[in-house]
Amino acid sequence: MNTLQVNIVTPDGPVVQTEASMIIATTEAGEIGILPGHIAMVAPLQIGGLRITKNDSTEVVAVHGGFIEVRPEVVTVLAQSAETAATIDIARAKEAAKRAEAELQSKQDAAELQKVELDLKRAMNRISVYEGR
Image (cartoon, rainbow, N blue to C red; front, top):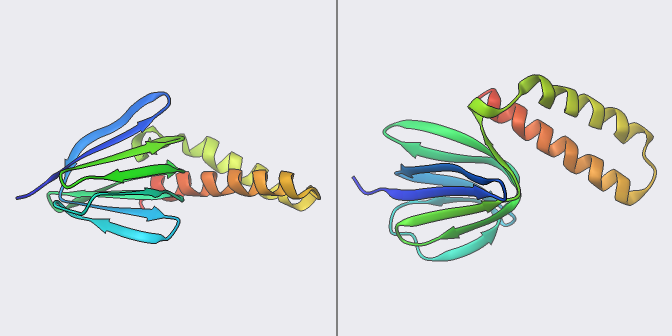
């Protein structure tokens, strides 16, 4: 079975180093599926779950922006932050989502609104990955 080497790296260090038969990532242009032998490319990532499939099981990693570099046998994700479901503090993520939703009601400044919306997206992404969606 052909596989890809998958490396997810943040400024704090490596988050995932594994092999996969397929990867699905959410880029700014939409979702892409990557199989072994994929053409080389680089794309900016959206906040979302990166799905890594191997041996008929799928692991989802919460990725919060960054870039994906694809080469025929290696996929590297350079993310601002990334978390596996096992490392997500779900209580903290739910609290962050509640706090961001409350702040959305009170913010008037466009820059502050954008920051709070990003905070909410990151929190919701963590919750989704933790709950296995």
